[in-house]
Amino acid sequence: MRPLDFFIIDDSEVNNYYTEDLLDEIDFVQSVAVFTNAIDALKEITDRHAAKSKQPDLILLDVRMPEMDGFEFLEEIDQQIDNFQDHTKIFLLTSSKHRHDLESYKKQQLASEFLNKPLEKNQLIAKINNHFLEE
Image 1: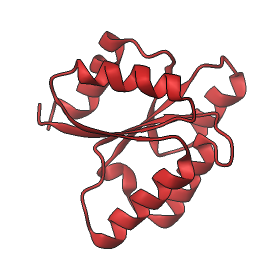
Image 2: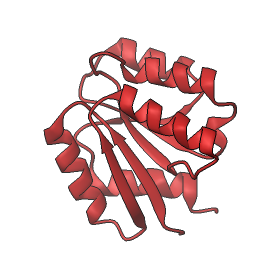
Image 3: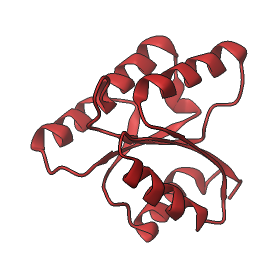
């Protein structure tokens, strides 16, 4: 598998530390950028799009965040960048068992996985392999 660039978007610094540490253990991770709010991550992505710079290969996106939640982030990306999912995969992350979150995930088109936190290394690798191994 080719080396992959990751964005972690989560308002919890503890979760970010854990996820970043987990990614450090995976061989095919090239880079990891961490954002504690979706607005900053959205700006980085739209700036890269405007500059025609490389987008991350995979975004690990928390569902529940203040200011802009994961689903609002998806709506903004969808409105601002055509065919974003063709170049970047998005995995939604949640620590809640809210039925509403799962229903919202099923209605959207951009995120390709819905995972519970804390992430498990083997499960994450399997999901990544499902999306990137054929490349």
